[in-house]
Image (tube, rainbow, N blue to C red; front, side, top):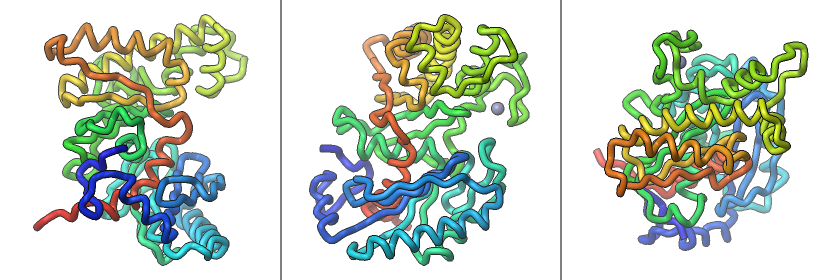
Length: 336
Ligand SMILES: [Zn+2]
């Protein structure tokens, strides 16, 4: 059983006691938007009823209108369900979930897009958005391994094209004063490093993201004319014993450990969860990350921080998007 951090339901604090709601057919849409968008429908227990992928369009308005039509189709197809309480959207970049806007991203050419307003207009359903790292953190505390049942403070590190984090403090997602918290990938770790897209030099992102791992691998492999692999392909190469791929991933693990150590020193989480394709090489990267953290932690050695890979091998942020509506429905309202 998982505790619902910062939430109660019917006087209880367990998912199981809330799951009876699924008997009346509560359903949730979720939209996850990297280059390829995934539109999914789930029941109250987060079980997928439907999932379909679309190429994400560069014209945000036209694309969200198209998705709105698809959601209306889904509703018609599943008209046996009594209630559709809302749509959760996971977005790859800076998200202001108070204004309902997707601010910017390196993955999508969208800027200041009023996602909530556009999708609500297209579907006549409530919409909640958040960024993919925070959605993933939410998925871990709601639907992650039972070992997190008592965890109140968790750091989620999303290793993808870029590097971003979701921070859970005292059982709730931390969003910050401007709702853009978690961009720890842009903490500089080398002032003489390369220029980052954020305008600074030597950001953590440039050393520990998938993009960095692939770049490192290409440098080690040589032979510039060969095809550039995806991170999934690169992890398959690691699995097959490729020396250049293995060394590239080992080096990324060292940088992950360096950055995570700084965050542990600053945030003092009980658990650090790492998600992304790179965790397919967990047996390779975990000892390196743990070794780095042991070397540099300020807290006493008796104060052990668990470092785990995500409970979800596939699409943790989609799980989180599906959870956004559940989280909203069951959260205790803020006073004042
Ligand atoms: Zn940066």
